[in-house]
Image 1 (cartoon, rainbow, N blue to C red):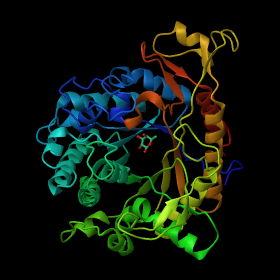
Image 2 (image 1 turned 180 degrees about the horizontal axis):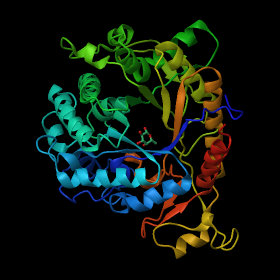
Image 3 (image 1 turned 90 degrees about the horizontal axis):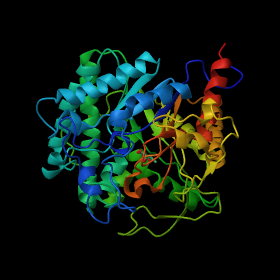
Image 4 (image 1 turned 180 degrees about the vertical axis):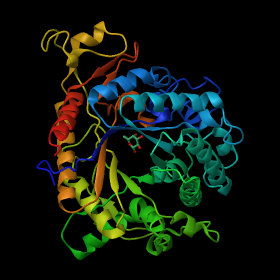
Length: 470
Ligand code: FCB
């Protein structure tokens, strides 16, 4: 092991997703997605915004690729908008949609950056939702067809594929809590969605293996490993139960254990499992992607219909991000160690980690030298040239979490890479543009990209890692 604790082939990357950055929602034959419908429904997005334009990355992907090159990452995790490929979620592929991702992939490869596409980051074609969406089994089959189209289109050029991103959010925030598209409030539908999202993952994994393509295929989840507020057995049990829905519910079936019975019974979850489904879902994956932002502290409370798992989140006095999320870098190490010991995945990647803070631009023309690379924006430029964003809190957040990755590796976790969320400030779902997670600010009027200090920090981390290569 090298002195800095990271292996030579460690993947340093950055993530975005289609609906959050692309814009161009009605161009080149793109169909409507559930996020178009949801964001245009009054009252759903806190700042009343939508992803119609977002960061305009559909048109400015070359600017984005240039930024990535400047950052020095060796991987870019983006997602493919299913409605660009099959506007109605089924049938013949829309060549213009494929061409877009093909150009993006070529542009990345030219710069030595590995493309890491995610097939599903929440933008389901609206027509499939009209037919029932993820609670319907047919959606999983439609997804498998779409995945097949993409495998064939990008086969020789893409070597890392993610099936679905954070299916917990799609199922529970989308169908039970009403916070995400399609905005429903029905736990029964959410449980059906859980199974069909996992089935979609399993079916696409099987197709991936059948193509004989070289490369890795995995799933990305947002697991939690909740911390007991006190060191008592009752608290430890509450913390364990509190982690079931976001962690065991996904990893148990993916690693061949079926659905966790304790969860199923406590929540009265009826998964529409047919013969052979669990085998498909349990087809070996090459990696598990972990999205980590925060860790919560919990205490027990009586189990009942309103609280079937019997726990409550306890507020802490820890520092918080603008989302109100506790900053707990140590929690990332704990989570990675737990997953690695409990499910023994071949490889783990932190596929998202980052933080929203209130960024205050400072006008410091000349401070760092007008033409230094740090002050040169991309996109249009004079305004960007005079402004800097000294996002010291984000830097501290990233530093702490990168250290936690290093410690996890030292403890034997097969952690192979780390991706910052996000390359750009973007459309943060029901928060609209009010929450900024980017290493790069985006001027809403001009679309100029302005790297923040955290961009330079991450670049220095990657540079140092390269220098430490043996
Ligand atoms: C994750 C999502 C990602 C982004 C971050 C902040 O849950 O996968 O799209 O919104 O949170």
